[in-house]
Amino acid sequence: MERTLVILKPGCLQRGLIGEVISRFEKRGLKLVAMKMVQLDEEILKVHYAHLLDRTFFPWLRDGMMAAPVILCCWEGYSAVQVVRDMAGATKASKAVPGTIRGDYSLSAQENIVHTSDSLENAEIELKRFFVESDYCEYKSPLDPFKYAPDEY
Ligand code: IDP
Ligand code: MG
View 1 (cartoon, helix red, strand yellow):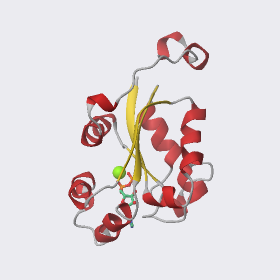
View 2 (cartoon, rainbow, N blue to C red):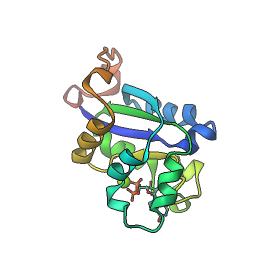
View 3 (cartoon, helix red, strand yellow):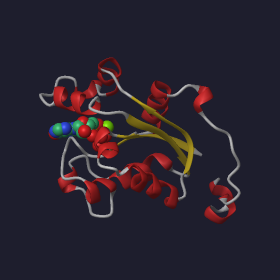
């Protein structure tokens, strides 16, 4: 089973959309295996958004990500990285397809509700950035046989 990182951004918290967004992942069949609320700081954002450090909008992005706490979630499921990425929709939310999270809840390229890992490799790196092993919870998912074929879980 793949695991991926979702960050519910400060705007998601402030706008009261946390429940809506989490509910989408739950209903899709993904399993929540770790979750915590934290205040991000500049140090971790420079690492997390290292690929954007030289962009003119970086200071706005950094300040936006520190404007309120975020909710960090690890979701597990079949093909979870791509599934969650597709559910988030395009980065520029004004172009995101309706039915995606960004396409339903945002118009902004910056204030776009969620971060989602963009590859399995980056998911592993990002999860290590924000979670330690003891943050993960082990529990049974008795509905898995109703969600998946035998070779999918
Ligand atoms: P992603 O979040 O869809 O993976 P990235 O290109 O990795 O997109 O960018 C990370 C975050 O930086 C975006 O989610 C968004 O908040 C912000 N960002 C990206 N491009 C722009 C832009 O052109 N203007 C303002 N903010 C941007
Ligand atoms: Mg990205």
